[in-house]
Image 1 (cartoon, rainbow, N blue to C red):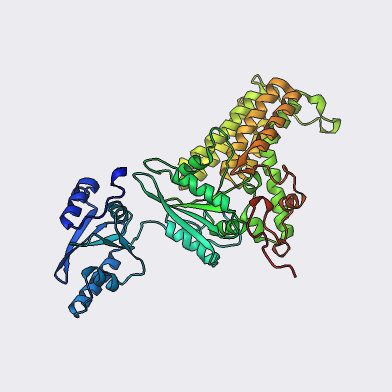
Image 2: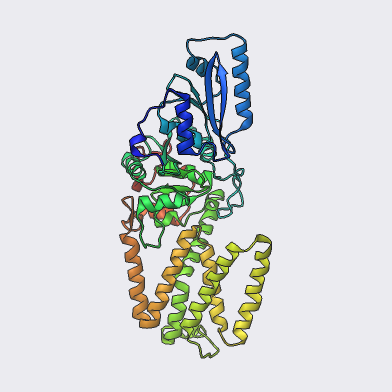
Length: 492
């Protein structure tokens, strides 16, 4: 690792010193993928350094061929540096003056030319990171809409965003985070739309990160900038869809792109940002509203269905006579609360197993779990049928939640409410629900109330949460974003 005292060290003029430094600090000669090519241009020694696997070999060969041709044709300018700078046929050429910048550029996949006696290098962006092509994210599928999604390449991800927002005020501020990894991170926002204070705060938080590396990429960044602690609820939103990211940029959000991650961090994000899905906006407003309300019902059932049913089992007198059939018809020696917890944990086991099971086998595993395990558990008296029914419906509600992080947090709250009902019955349900709502209300993410627009209450924004309005009727950006320019379209 390069120490702080070397951060300002200028690039040596001697190629021998540079090579010695690369051998001692970067592992030149030990690491097979780090190399140097030694050439001569206009009787001057020129070296260029590269990392195999991160550079496009075809680009390098093309550049060298054109330089040789220019040299053989007798082109000359004052100084080798000027010659190379004027004849490097590439759109991205930058001068390098410090040794740290030199090493970082090489290890980032650029090739860097250095000349004897110059004390300055030329970095050429010939990066060709290994990775996949854009494809539809598995967690954010839509019936209609674009099928391209973010990948692990930050350059490609920013290009997908640029393709949708061709505004000259769209900014991607690049920085490096991690003393050893030097991971590329870009802050994305639209000037005069995003709140400058929010942009400044995020920039300050990212620059304050002091860690050796970011192997977990965006998740590590989230833990540094939001300081979530043991709060299970997500304080930022993730998306792998370029259209979703673009919509949030136009609303005034600030996005964080992290290299090696296909997910983009959206800040700030309230509770209701996590319950929206792109599918609602790919249908007509009426259909989108229907889909949204169906999703709301699923989310509500994932939290409150099991605690409510268990409460009615514990206190049948709460049910009207016409609904007296609700409750277990069969008797079992195992308490209902134990059955509910075991069945709910069983669903969680299946979810985890599905993640680690190869795709061709996951379908067979699901059939075994659904048909054999559930039925046998009922036959042997471990569970009553109603427990399997309500746990299954609650589990389906969990899967209807668009945000994976939110669905897991809701499951934790469901366990909490079940335990409250088991110990205190009706008062436990009321007190547990009240604590849950108060907990959500007091959360703030980058100064934004987590339960906005219901608390603080804003009628028009609440209406937009409940009803999917047509785009031509949405004239203003959300007030809570404190956008510099709230107008989205001209009112005729």
